[in-house]
Length: 321
Image 1 (cartoon, rainbow, N blue to C red):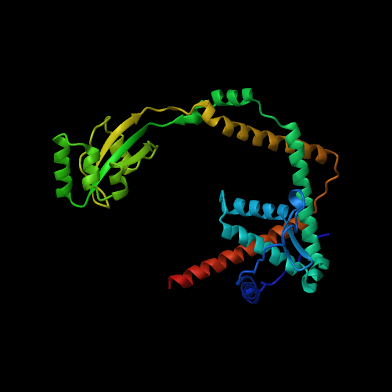
Image 2: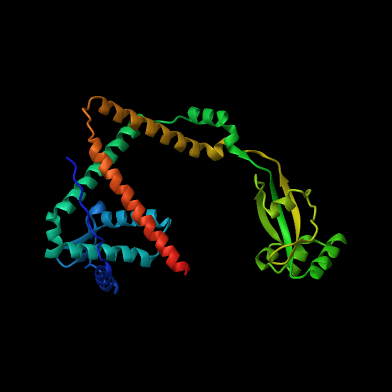
């Protein structure tokens, strides 16, 4: 019932070199003839390569969506969009070759395709089931907010500005001007060596008090509103801080967090719903597990992990010599 198969490491250098040579130059993408590919909806053809490769609008939009998700980008440049289209065309051209087509019959490839297909089907089914069964009302979200109010606490905050000087003598000169009543913002613009904040009148921004305050926090949260600090030595020079505004601790308004609460409650309900569905299936299933096989797999995994850790340790020792 249980069998193991060991594979050596695949040498990828030749493959990488071949792919680099293939993917290096950009494809020459010519405009489609006027009127070509004009099909309604997502079946509209965006690009073709020869007679057998056609990329539809739906395919391109799906590829763009995947790229955005992986890269975290909200929008793409024209160059990036063209690159995605070229990748789709290259893939289409490769899939037309006899050598690549032969892999469709490879048992390992077919097994992976079946596994992916099964995973996709189950995920889509679960999504549809959960969407119809799981709802989060405004009342539930409001109740959660009120019962868990400490989660939405906002700590004390201070809106701060500073002037950074190169030497202590320069800092003492600026502090003397401050004590004489000269404007902090104007002095920051004139003397601060931190040019970006200096142009803003020394404004750093709003800083929240933390359980482990930084050295900056320890200074700022001891100041009263509009109070100026003593000269503080820093790695960049000598600084003088000012507390522009003080904000007492409070709580985030419900409207600011309502959407996050709904999403959190939905995820929990979805997990619970899926768990119930699976448990009902398990009750009626005659599940049997080959414990000996499972133990062998676990043992092999432990050996592989130990070997990997040993190689990493050796590599570190060699690199430190």
